Length: 353
Ligand code: PMP
Image (cartoon, rainbow, N blue to C red):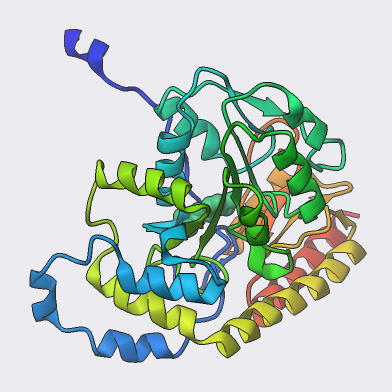
């Protein structure tokens, strides 16, 4: 068909499955196993259908201001989007606009190469070392921008801010994006570095540590200039990205600091316990600072374990890709969920030895 010549063809990102079975244990998309902050319930009850007649605030002022206060920056340094995927998509469009290839790790969030292809941004990947750590020296060559998650996904490995700064020092002339989707599970946020580096964009999300994956809120922080450019592109794309209910509920998720600390603390404690149990079962994995563990069994192929778990209604994530096809990414669920997983794995592995 002639018209097909003009079609923008893309190979889309494949999100984790969202099966809807009542008794499943869902450990495949790094969601939070606990409900959002209690204040969210009251905010839902306070929603008034008649308000939906009206467009939402295009600048998402209240949420932006609350985020700015929470993180101790100016509201002009905060940008809010529909999940961090939306923020990152806008950031790629805004900042990665040169002829040189952008750089990101070879094993990383598998949306980066999809956006690069969608926007026709040239890119090169930098291989992680054999322990899956970022090699900062790889980011010293000429490039059109840099992006990496910290902690990285799907490995869970956190790089200390010294490494982040080393990459920033070598990249003063391009935008460097640090995707901190999993920073609240033990890592240190790179935010203080924005004082020194006006080309640093820090991106975070409400989807993991704030238990709001279904709401879709993500945000970016950086210099006022960076945020202004990002905002200009957003307003050239869609003025009303954050809907009214989301604006109202989002602030509630941010206000309850005690609850936030409680659930992230609980997830970290469960993660550390699961690490010990998995090790005893013969799994090996990088030391995760995220809400998941990226594990490989010393004898049984990941694909087989993945299938067996699925048949037992336990969903984890597996990628048939170079370097990582023998790994499973297991989200940290509740203690009860992890006990069921561990009991199943214990039995499954025993039967095979
Ligand atoms: N960055 C990374 C590294 C992720 O793993 C995810 C979750 N898939 C996201 C960004 C996007 O999350 P969200 O759009 O829900 O904020």
